[in-house]
Image (cartoon, rainbow, N blue to C red; front, side, top):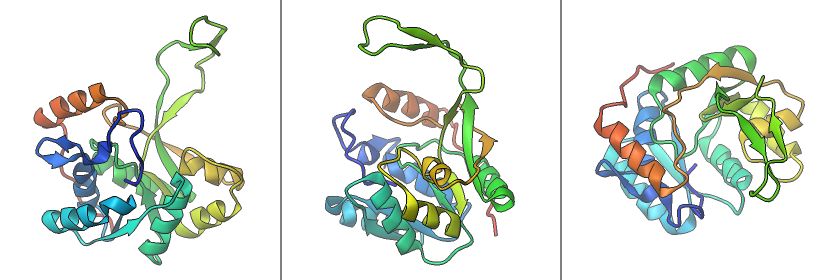
Length: 219
């Protein structure tokens, strides 16, 4: 998923350079080492950029135009993917995804139908309506920060998006609205989502340090 506008970063963040490649190229390479079919969903003005990128990377990927909302883009991506047993939906702004995490999510989704990576909340969490004064301390027991890739049986996530009401911020929320249980998989604390400019500098340092590693393919 690379059709967002990157409003908080003030730039089309998935196309910013990261270690000599666009941000989205890193997650494409990780998935290319695991799956056999890829769909890159981009904004209308980025379709040619997407085609040039997958050609440069030598990946058998389809490039399609996204929609107005994230869930519209997901639907278009699912349509472009065709018929498969399992589908992984990943944010292009998470360039440090590890192939081993992708494989773990696929294995869990194959067993449970839906699986997402997550890490437990470790910091103390406060609630503030105005951003100036603390209203309460939130009990962090049982709270998890969810990442991507989020992996589903294709028919499950298609049905969920047909039934979803309103906007959802991730694919697991669509599955939850449809009454589906979603399995948590141990996430990777380095599977960062780039949101502000400082995140890009952190990702650059981690890539240069050799954080990304290869992985095998799943059948």
